Length: 241
Length: 219
Image (cartoon, rainbow over all chains, first blue to last red; front, side, top):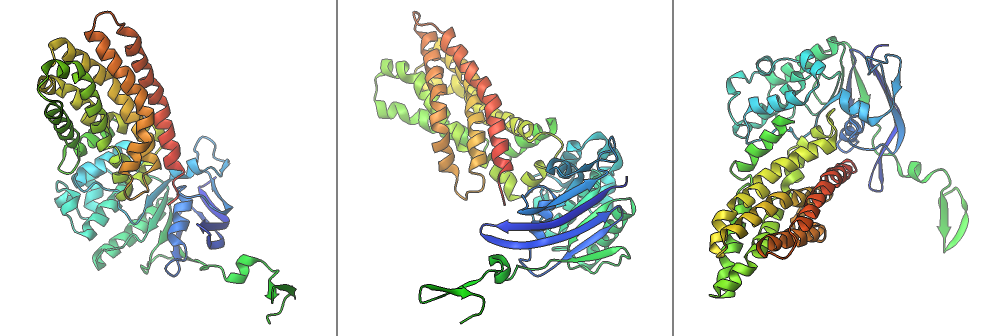
């Protein structure tokens, strides 16, 4: 069975507020899902839940075909998703004191042998994001855009089938935007799945948009039975005074 | 894992890494005590090992709050939690690196700092040995506290408050083993073995507790 990520009826809560609910989609090999929505509509939260870093309030996330040993198994455990996903958040996950090369070598050393074999060598990954000349500089002296590109190179040095990208093009220039587009397209073409929250107009035929529903309206949260209080007494359900 | 150890060590001794802050703090404590106690050389030699232990305990607490906070701030913590390697093992390796840059260095500095407290060779040797065996437990206890307070902006003081009650047995048996080694009639081996046992206990509990705390972090 090919790899398939399916999300059903997902809801997320931060503190007392429900951020979104009833988010469902499914993505098979080669799928590119672009998550869109207003600020605060829960795009980052959705990606973090899929990555297994946050708990969902309701709903289920299933991964089918993630385990090569048991190709027919459908897995709902967060541990499985953590191992299958590359997560690129707002923060780059790079140590500013260490060189670009050392940072990538560190993450590559953490990967399992098959994912290292599948991934690119560090030099090749740096070539891909155009940072080969800066490999021996500490990340801290790079510009914000260059740091972002170094973070993108991290996705290439170890292969993981599912990419979760949160604003991957933040701080990037137009040429680098095109590079991210190419990276996403190539990853999808090699039987990967990309879930990206971005405003980048991707020139990909298979890209689908997933619009976040936005915060649920008040009456949705309270349920159907709205009771109006009139002078301290229950005045019966329904109409507003 | 070896690379994580080397990376953490490199970061600890880079500028701003705080690897040597503990040593400087240790020096400050040890250098101030003789001035506070006065020119009684015999008294100084008697309480010297205890002063070294208290100084080392406080110095070991210094960098602990940054153990996971620095990783969280640049997003590394998220990625460390998404590795195939168990999180508790990652925590254990980070503790080892932290210990090398704090406890081990403190233990190694005892021959120099002991001279300031008028300690004899035997007392210096005994303090070194007990610090060498006892300080890993301090780091391992601290890892749990650091994980609990990782999301708090100024969690440093809270880490100390959380660590101290658990660190007191380590201090008691560390100092009593040292005293026993210096003064002949007391048994050295009993408190020393308890010190080792505390170490092993926290080597299991610390990383597990820290990993659980980090996993339940929701942000």
